[in-house]
Length: 418
Image (cartoon, rainbow, N blue to C red):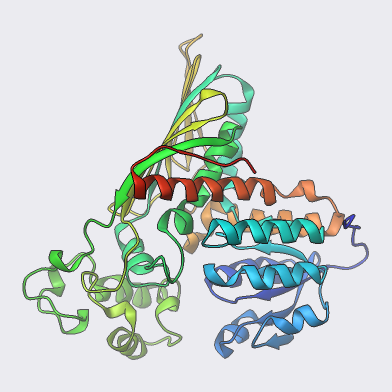
C-alpha cells in the first residue's frame, strides 16, 4: 500500500482526463494557484476542449498517461460510463486520483472500481462537492454541537430547476439511463452522500417512488413540431430552446449552458447547433427516459429517518433542508441556517450571504474547496484532507442503487454494508 509521501519544494503536478464543463472548472483552480499546483497534461478527444484546458501536454486519449506516469495526480472527469477503465489503469500507474461522480452506472462496476483503487493504495477522492461548501460546514457545525439534542429526522429537497432539467436530462447527455445512469445516481448521489455526512450515519434502508411524468410525447402541445426553431407554439412553451440559450449568449456570452450546445460563440453558430443538434429538439419528442420526479423514505443508523425529494419543476435554486432533533430544529436554504433551541426558546439565523447553487456558479464554493483539499492531500501526503474517499462514496452509491430497486419493485430495500 502507498504511504502517500508528501511533495516538497514544487507545486503538485496534475493531469486532466475529460475537459468538459466539470474538468475545466477544476482546472481553473489549478491554473489560478500556480504556487500550489500545475496542470501538466490534458486528455480529451476534442481539440477545442484540449485547447481550453491549456496544458502543455495534450492527448486524444488517457492511455498514454497510464503508460508513463507524468504527474502526481489526475482528475478523471469523463462521462459517467467512462470512469472505471481509466481510474483503474491510472491507479495502478500510481497516480493520486480525483474522480467525478457517479463512479459508475452499476453496483458491480462501482464495487470493482473501489476495490481496484483500494488495492492500488493510491490517494483517492470523489467529487462530492456538497461536502466542501461553507454552508455544509455551518450545518455540520450546528448538528455536531448538540444544540438539536438527539437527532430524529431530516427532510431534504433538491430543486433541479425546470430549465436545467430540460437542458441536461431531456436534451443533454444525462437524458437516458442507457447512455449515462439513473437520474438519482447522476444528479442526486450528491444528496444521499450529504444526508449521511451531515447526520453522521449510514443509510440502512430505503424505499421510494418516481417516474417520468411530463416530458413525454402525449404531453406535447397541439401544433408543436420536432424542433423549437420552426415550432409555431414555441413562444408559449416554457422549455423553448430559444428562451433558454439565446438570452444567455446575448447577456453573458459563451458560458454554460451555451458551451454545452456549441463551440461557436456567435448567435448564428448557436442557431445552427439548435437546428441540427439535440439541444433544439422538442422536449416532448426527445429520447429521454430518466425520471423527472422522485421521492425517497430512508432509515439511517440509530433509527434516524430521512425523506428526500428530487423534482424538475422548480426554480433553479439551492437545496432546502429541515433537521429535527429532540431539543431543537434547523432549517437551511444554502445561504442561511435558522436554528431554534427548545430549551431557551431562542431562534437564531446565521447568514452566509449569496453563494452559487449549481455547476454554473461553483456549487456554492464546493468546487474550489474540493480541488484545494485534494491538492493539499497530495502535497502533504495526508488523505484526511479529503472528505469523500472510497468508503463514503461507496455508501451513497449503494443507497442510490437500492433506491432504484425499490422504485422498480415497490419494495423496501436494505442497503448493503460496504
